[in-house]
Amino acid sequence: MDPKEINDKQFATKLIHFGQEIDRTTGASSVPIFQASTFHHFDLDNPPAHDYSRSGNPTREALESYIALLEGGTRGFAFASGMAAISTAFLLLSAGDHVIVTEDVYGGTYRLLTTVLNRLQIDSTFVDMTDFDQVRAALQPNTKAVFMETPSNPTLKITDIGLVTSWAKERGLLTMLDNTFMTPLRQRPIELGVDVVIHSATKFLSGHSDVLAGLIVTKDDSLGRRVKQLQNGLGTVLSAQESWLLMRGMKTLQVRMEASERGAAQLAEWLDAHPGIERVFYPGLAAHPGRDVHAKQSTSFGAVISFDAGSGERARRLMSRVKLPIVAVSLGAVESILSYPAMMSHAAMPRDVRLARGITDGLVRYSVGLEAPEDLIRDLEQALEE
Ligand SMILES: *Cc1c(COP(=O)(O)O)cnc(C)c1O
Image (cartoon, rainbow, N blue to C red):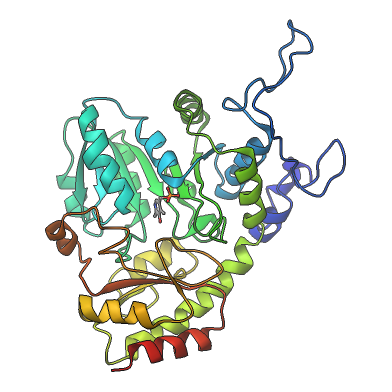
């Protein structure tokens, strides 16, 4: 479909007819994989549109315009991993700058800020962003940006995106948001004023636990130019093969999300009623403190649930007994994934910091896949038996 005509279509239609779904030269039903590092100059006086794949590859560019369309931004960029995207986004900042960050941010983002960016004099303050007073109190004369992640990871705390973003705008701060958990189907940060939206596309966007990728979408073109310069300068690009595989997965995003979310809602209710479970973290539960804020800025409660099995020992027992989910780091795939933040994604975090952030020894995270929810529940039931 002509890219100009797609804008007024619904999300499900955009996922399939994103503008480059048919190859213009051959009519092929998918984007060709341009497996080339460089491009011939037929005429030295008229350089080709692409000259070197780090600077631009047609397959990657198809993905980049695809994600920009889905997020409603001006430009999209694809990276070798979610962390490559996050690292690149943070390098919009300079030495001497300060950034306010969601306290229970993804473990890799925490590690980047506290072990790499700190050495470059980019300082960060971690705050509980559910509490707006803490955000305001963290402002320093050199604060240049706010980095949000909502729902946060793994305790699914909710930041009011519109509130924090409008406060940041008034102070001229750059706003960035990690939208991995909700995807552009469910949460639309650019429409709420966010400047830079970031994804670990390794998760729901690719959806099959077979691609490592990251994406950035910028709200305006001038930021887009700066990200482009960083992506090319740092060389954090995604390969043509992986770009193609990611687009392949993204086409089914909506049907996958809808099915996983239905399962997650069932599992959350069941876990919440289970006497052996200490606490369930899921924004869809009535008792979740961020439920109303989340419902205001998102069209679903997502497919990830965290719960406290009571102790480290019980969490380990549960993980050794489950038969359906794979026990692994990661989330957002066709298969359910059970992970143990204390020993996996947040292992790099000092224990006292981890506990202060609610990531207890008994906390496990369940990313609900496409299996029958009844089977997942029966599997959990046998795994939790005393
Ligand atoms: C996985 C993840 C990342 C990191 O992405 P990679 O693709 O693993 O580099 C960043 N943020 C969130 C919320 C994630 O879940």
